[in-house]
Length: 445
Image (tube, rainbow, N blue to C red; front, side, top):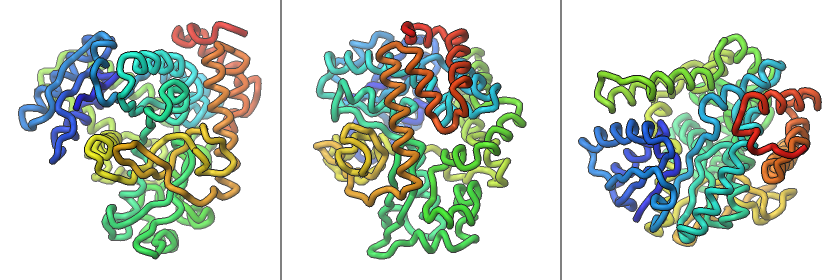
């Protein structure tokens, strides 16, 4: 089978190749890397070539034209960043300079990122539907839930969104309890970067109360250190790590401000150094050193502000997005049933949301594709923010499709982490001044 990666020059692409090469029963025998930036594509191609010296992986082909890259493919990974790292910096700073959270998926920055990204994703979806209508599209692109919902209007059930945050939480919780990941069933529900772990079932026993009751066990889980044991016990659930931005907004803004450099600014500097200069080291060695530094600094300000400490070693070794994606490909391509947390239409799974609303919940996956697992309703404190944010996401999609500045302002102003309509207008106006990609989208009042 063939896999095409849209965004094949992305820094994390070698992780996908490594996961495919280590698969004991390979599903993919050809990997096509598509990117409009030929220089980035060649740099990442050199890393994969060096990696392939120690691994027997799929044949790799590079393409800078989209249609040849898609023709005849079975799976498509969509991993793009419209506006590049510089766009992320603007997303963060436009809000932070007003004293607001600009985080690229959770805060105002995520909405601005979505405004730029949705039109590009819709054009890609139209091309995929025309050139490779039978392909399964696996969306890595953030904001994952919003982007997946936009693409599903064109591709229907053939597009599936993925994220590695839930499975990372499951791994950490299982390690703390001393159980194997495969021996437990995890009840998790919400939206992308806005979900909660509600039960950990081992047989007919829920082990989550045991974890929540123990300060010692929670201290072994990054989310326990990040949120604090008392807060988790009061919730009766473990939130996705990105909910720290909701539950500790003022602390998050203070921590990011005190750091003096946003995450986007760090990654822009790192990526310019990596892609912009020749490195005397072996391509794989240079890439691995850069990747390790990137992983070690993930949520660094947040962990420092809460005393959560360094990331666990297991979380630094990969197995995130690429692991979820490989499990999904294996389930569909080999008809190996699996239970995975995915982003896909609700179809009656969570009350209060219509069938087309893309949610993030456990799904059963086989050759026929994924189906949401029936699950309990969200608690009122969870449902309120989920319904609000689904409306905000959909307003962003509508604004991007209509090219409407006023709808874009409305989306930001209705986001609970944006504190005024005037600030929403100021953020959009700054984005329009600094982001050519957004000026191409918002062409109407």
